[in-house]
Image (cartoon, rainbow, N blue to C red):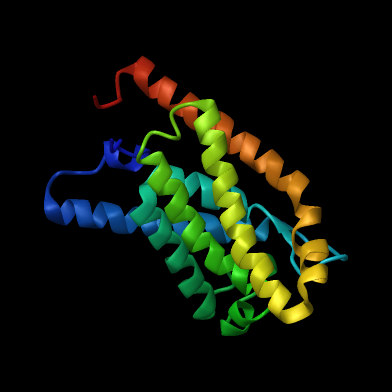
Length: 196
């Protein structure tokens, strides 16, 4: 059964205002991703930096729902490709999409949509299902990112440099997102803001 996302709870019913609301959330989500991309630690051992982006992907997917979450990631990629310094470490341009991190960026779109889709089915309401949604989203990012990286540097190197070193940090980000989402729903229920 479909459940409203956090964003859906406050969406205006009037069509024009609803479209403006959706656009504001998509653009706001893309800007949050740009900000989280600048929280970057260059990984000297890897062509892929450690960033806050995967946390943003999971959280935005769950908060915005699959359509808005995926659209926010598309907007983020479009903004960076168009020349805004929004990618990790202030990088920009189409070359980033074709480089070593391009697969991860494409994976962000799919992962946000998948996590949003699961959240719209109530997976973000309980700790264990929220955890499962975040793990699935992370696996989607790795699937796209490591596959693309493997095409550029080979599978063994891609796993060693683009997957294994990032697992501990991603587990911490998953734990944080998992803690925030069900707690947010409980807070809304306690304050009477949640729709039935």
